[in-house]
Image (cartoon, rainbow over all chains, first blue to last red; front, side, top):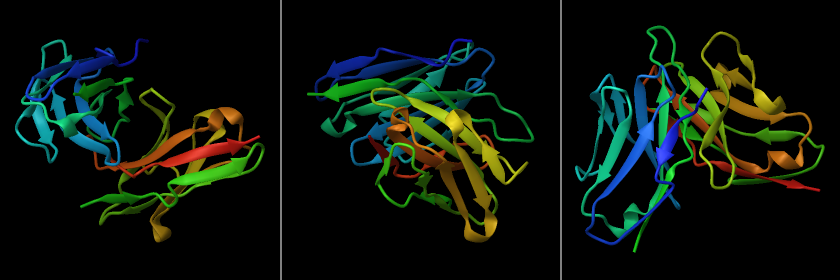
Length: 115
Length: 112
């Protein structure tokens, strides 16, 4: 079974540019989550998509946005990049069941560097 | 709001010794609890999860964790450390299928 795949592995941008990160979930998983892992700030929840809809959003400015496609893959877009956006961005997927929380399975991340 | 506290940002143990990584949660209702491991330049790998079925949870790579409601704890243990266990470990909490809230992580070093 293929795991969660993210692309690109590394992305280098300059301040003010826009970045697009992509994520393909495990087959059969309908939920996709995005997290930011920045140095000194730990793992912070960004966005949760399920069945094409945004279900929850973390405490991030509106220039962080995303979407989920009909095949359940997802994009994270970051506009007007700032130096502090430099981080490892992790995508996770899970199946959604009514009775019990299913664990989230993570990809290897996209490392975004802002120059 | 729920939160997770991991005591000790760095833990060092000798190869073959007991590994104990501490996690305490704060929540008004019993949460779902998870331990993840992160190796350098990789994502997070699920070690084990607690979802109320049993208080002692066995995971991969010989790790286990015990949920103690009275202590609001979910400490991770392994009887005998291996060099390959060197990594960063994260405790996380969730309620249902929403976001994970992570602790700040514990970097485990294994001394030969």
